[in-house]
Image 1 (cartoon, rainbow, N blue to C red):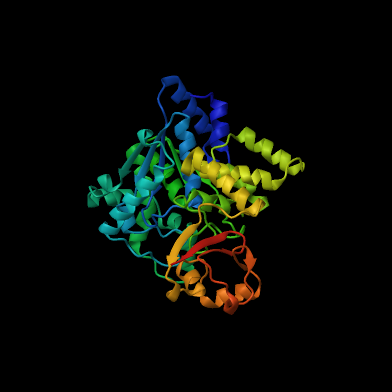
Image 2 (tube, rainbow, N blue to C red):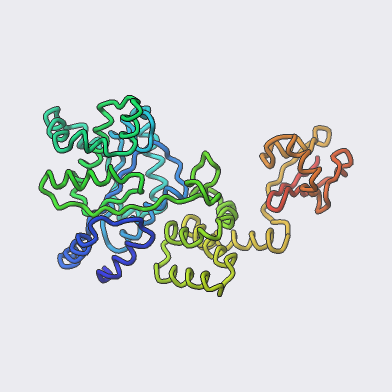
Length: 401
């Protein structure tokens, strides 16, 4: 294990808040003295199984703790998922079925192990203990907190004040998440800032069960590629961890300059000293933000696709965007001459969203055929092989048979 100050430095990189910082120091010292790793908890409800970089912020911090020698326990909320986390919701969430929970959990496990070390990660399901609680146990659990405390939660408070119904079972969600910490005797729990109430409940319940309270580490939410909204697939401002290397790289190059450092802190494992140097060089205008962003893009791709693919993605970007060359890995389709319709092919192969968009792009000079601007679809010169370019980064090769 690294020395205590070095561990705290790495653990603190990019975090929004650590509650129990002195406790963290004491836990790390005891861990080192007894040569016993700390138990680090992350609870995941398998409700949205497709992971993007916004979801990885907490997972990357778990990986850093794992690399420091500590034990990572991922709790898949197959039981709590049947209730649904009411956090941030203006009404009760629809409960998932057992089948939905298990299917989502399977996908989640596959994706999180792309980030965490499989051999150093324990994955458990909270139904193992929550489903076994007696009604007497549940009553005792409920007695550890008050309705007033529950109504401190912003979403519950807003719903109460607006007279929007709150079902009693929703109050049990944070209690169950807190009970998970009791069962695994967590030393540290991670969560996003939106999970503050639920995570802090673990500290309260551990005290009620005469356990040492866990340290809580809250990670900030990550803005998406638009630089404004939280990263979200529905908003289209995301980088998915399952996307192709070249797509990830190109998307990363669109990160706003003022978010470069935040992305370095939250979605990479780069040491904080190096991040500080990058920040200083940017502030003093010693480097071109584009070059720093290229290094960031390459690092993001490397984490999910490896060194070779990250190098290929970088070279492809340089060829296409900096040198204006046509990439050698573009999609190729074959079309019978009598059935060929350029507009239809572009729509069918998802290069554009509609036929009207094709016509608009042509009128704006945004489509090239064999490196020549297409000015009139009716004057298209059909050849055996055509390289179609839309804008700067979309290409397709059409072979006429």
